[in-house]
Length: 223
Image (cartoon, rainbow, N blue to C red; front, side, top):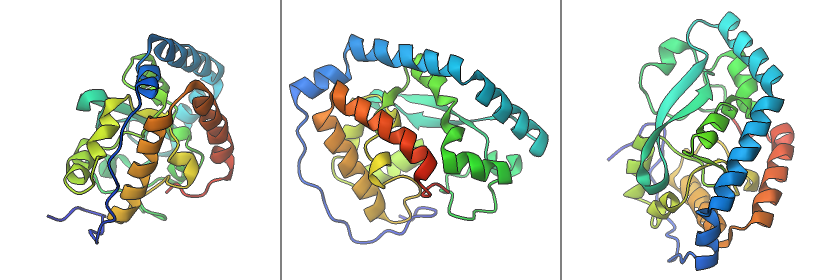
């Protein structure tokens, strides 16, 4: 079976993973859910000017809706509609393709390129966090079609669905952000995601959040 934009090569299988009771109880605790909601609401209020400017910029630089919605898999593989600022020309975005964006992708608008490079296109996902579909920190959610493809090829991929997906995560601050043109690239991301799930705690989440802020300004791995 082939998949658009992904090179299927030999895999380096990961070993078995065991999620500790301590990590599992923290990840799915009421305390963490309350913290996610509180921080997401505060960020939305603080970033109203930025969100407004981006929305205006998208509306005047290319025709189409301001937000892009796509089905993603959440905790327990429950599907939800992930929100992003639209970064592609609408004719391309609504075509229904799940092909990953690549560097210099012609489908991406000039403003969209800037939003992707700074991860500002992800800001609407704060609403997903408030709604309980996502957490601030966790494995990044992939398109449903991507999940089906990778579950058949990457051992323990399904364990990512034991927790809520995140706005950012350990993989994103560990150099595994951006496209995954080879199976090995996704394998590395999954291994890092599972490492996070095994060792999650409030101090770890705080460090990831702070590192993400730095990554927004320094990383060039986004397409």
